[in-house]
Every structure is written in structure tokens, then in C-alpha cells.
Image (cartoon, rainbow, N blue to C red):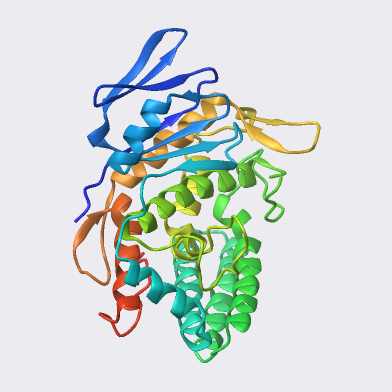
Length: 343
């Protein structure tokens, strides 16, 4: 079983990441700000104007440490990886499954159902705590709507129909998001906006989704699956479709729940965001660091995996799901067991 390792996030502009023997070193103005052995790392993520040495890239490639480059806002730019791992027969099985309509529909349906059920669990958790009648009605309506969509999805055998139900569920779920946030001044949610995010809530969601996507891509590459060839998300040049597929199961459980926790516990505040001339909303450095620390802490938490019936760290979840998908594609499992959150 893969160990739960750490990810280094380098956010200070002008930093330089280099290799010293078997260590990764982060420098700023010739001062060493961080030194960590490479064997303790799963990934390095550089935001904005952060430089890296060729020697470091080689070390990361040999040791299987993903090295990713994002804009200062958190948008993906590039990723440096070593040789492709895994059995070529697994990737061939993945490609054949992606070309088989019935298998594609089966996997897409399983992923969407898990995504909706996990979103419903998050709404239910808030519903149980709410006392005001108006809020409870709104949340109950979303819970009922999501349950109905799952019932309709269970009988569909068409991937495009599954995508349509996913969109309907997203509208119902995000339509209740203000009730999940509560009355936090400065964090009003008017709907999902991505490129660019137009309010602090969307800025937080997009940023955490980017972090999660980085981790899921790393898990798929470790197993030997091709992150670009998915089942629910359509293939597109440069798009990690399979990683986006696997992410869907974990959005509500990890990303959305983390964002809501940061807001409701007032760990992030409205003054930690700024509006650009384009209308895009960005986090300041302190807010970004708060989110990164919270994300790392959440990955250290534990849960009981519903299929394996074992206690694991949250940070191992996407690695386990990638392995379960690989076992299904190889024919070792009769069906892919998506992650279902027992909230």
C-alpha cells in the first residue's frame, strides 16, 4: 500500500526550488526557507514566479514525485513526471473500455451516482443541524431533488443522459449552497463561476478543486492509468478526463466540505480576497496559505473506506480509488466501486 506522503506548496513569488543531494531545498534571496528529504514527498506544486533547477526535475522524475506549475491564481500550467509506470496491458484495457459504449455508460453512471449521493450527504449533514424553518425547507427540497435524480439515473444506459442528470444535480446542489454557508457576510454565493471565479466562494472552490485534481492525476499515474482517457468527461487535447472523472466522487466530501468549513469557522475572511479589473476574484497570500494548510491537514484525517472496510488517511483515498478502477478494468472486479461517503 502506498504511504501517505506530503506535498510541498511553494507560493512565495521569486522562490527557487533546487536539489541538494537527496533533499529538496526552497530558497528565497539565497536564504534556505525549507529543506526536506525527497523520499518524504509525493508532489511539489509551484505557484506563479517560482523557479526550479534541472537537477531537481531529474530527481523528481526518478523518485516519482510530481512537479506541477500553476499560475499565482492556481490555474494549471504544466506538470513534470518521470517514466510512465504500470503495465501496458492495463492502459490497453482502459482504452478498449473507453471505446466500448456499454462500459463507458456503466462507469459514467456509477461515478455520477456517487457524486450526487455524496453531495446529498453533505446537504443532509447541514439539514440535521439547522433550526430555522426556511433553511430546513430549502435544504429538504435539495435533498429530495437529488434523491429523485439518483433514482432516475439507476436505470439509464446512456452516457449523455448521465451527463444531463449530472448537470441537473449540480444546479440543485449549488442552488442550496447559500444555506450550507449560512449568514456569513461577504460570502454570498450566486452560482458557480469558474473562469474567472467572480466571488470569494467560487475562488475557494476553484482553488481547492485544482489541488484535488493535482493529487488525483498523481494517483492515476502511479497506478499506470492514463489520466487523459476518461469515461464521464469527454476527451479533449490537454484535458485530464479520467482525473476529472475520479474527482467527481470526492468533490463534496473533500473539497466542498473544506471550503464550507473554512468559511463557517471564519478561518478565511472577505478582506482576504481582491477583485481584479477583469472581475476575477483572487485570494491574497495569507488566505491562500490558510487554504493550503487546511487542505494538507484534511488529507491527514482518517476515514473508514466503505468498500475495503479499512481505516485509511483521506490522502490515500484517490490512490485507492485509482487501484480499484484498475482492478475493474483488468477484470479482477465485477464492477467499479465508487467512493460513497458515510456521513
